[in-house]
Image (cartoon, rainbow, N blue to C red; front, side):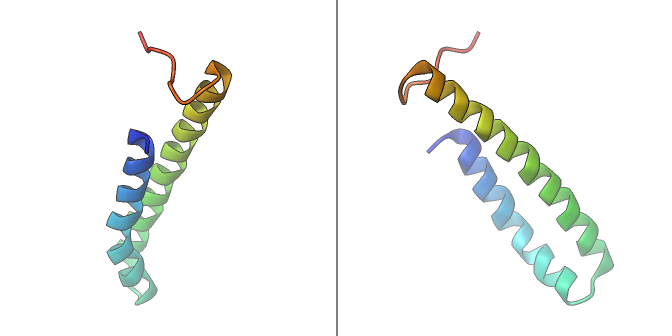
Length: 66
């Protein structure tokens, strides 16, 4: 798995408790969940770019970053 994918999973797992609190009516938790979802969006975009780089490189080894 890529480092970004692991970061995505960790972000979602960290938000789980706040989602439960938000559903129960905790307004502060809703703000934390919204922030976590913005992080998820940004990480997902990074993963998408990474997958395009892998595809364009022709294999599972991404090109060396400078």
